[in-house]
Image (tube, rainbow, N blue to C red; front, top):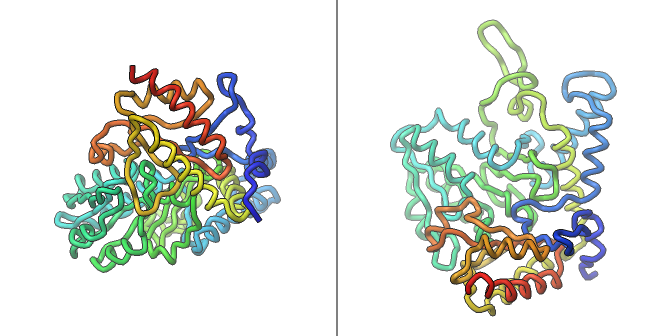
Amino acid sequence: MQFDVHALRPAFPALSEQVHGRPLIYLDNAATAQMPRCVAEAVQALELRRGNVHRGIHALSEECTAAYESARAAVADFLRAGAEQIQFTSGTTDAVNRVADALRGTLKPGDRIAVTRMEHHSNFVPWQQLCRETGAEFLILPLTEAGDLDLEAAQRLLAPGVKLVAAAHSSNVLGTVNDIPKLAQLTHAAGGALFVDGAQGICHEPVDVRALDCDWYAFSGHKLGAPFGIGALYARSPLSPIRFGGGMVDQVGDKTTTFAPPPLGWEAGTPNVSGAVGLGAALAFRRSLPQGWQAWEDQLLSQLEQGLSALDRVRVLGRPRRRSGCLSFTVEGASPFDLAVLLDQLGIAVRSGHHCAQPLLRALGTEYTLRVSPACYNTPEEIDALLAALERVIPLCTG
């Protein structure tokens, strides 16, 4: 059965809205995806009948505890992991910092941490600062000219002594999809552990952390249509607690404390229950998407890349072996910010800026770009409308 985007779109109320008197064309999904109505309804239902989780034996507490743990089970199932390996976070940035904090006491001068050149600042700066604090060496794995991770260079750089490698599942600028199983093989052969930033990758393909063979995998819910402020972290092995308080303890004595086993031992304080329930609903919605949605997204991205390549003054960044979710481009003589403002006036939402990836953009010889990121609810007509709008506004910005 062919994928029917027009049957899908009514599930997203925002897609029927207007901006500046024009129908909204939302192409900034790599930043935040629109929320399906069913997710908002699930969150509202919990907020209107709620109790504190893991705290009481009365009906409302037990109902909310069941909903919260059901959401954890949904995340585990989505990642092909065990529920005890999943901790809820506020998002990918929070997850990276949690792992960095947990590893702080294990690093010493002479140890090494490596990240790829394409990393979002959230998977770059925490490791950079951790190395500065501990005296460990901070390495940056290079890319090929096409924008792929240079695995041959990585193999040379990841000599024994590397403690951790941090890599994006896919780039939030180039759309490059990394060969995570191969990188895991190289990392483990060198004696290190692999942290994967799945904020982009999980949005566009099924994830099996066992097949990826990573040690940690993190993602943010809002990029999947869940509420803001919720995400999850998969940890192959338990992390030492780094945040302390209610909910994560077993026994508290005057001198010592013992902690609850994972995952509760990782989650101090009252958790974001409504966010977790919303994330569970978003994952259930994602599982219900009709067959063919991934091919539909790939088709939109191919249409976009071909159309941009035909426009004067436009340079599409990168030619990766496999691209998913987004691409970025520059226009000779034009500010990405000016272009984004003019596109917004036409009802078209795209992203302008450095996309929290300044080390990558410097390596690509530019400071800012425009980024377009279609989702499965976008249409070929919307891509055509963007391309036509660019033909109209580029001359206005280039004189």
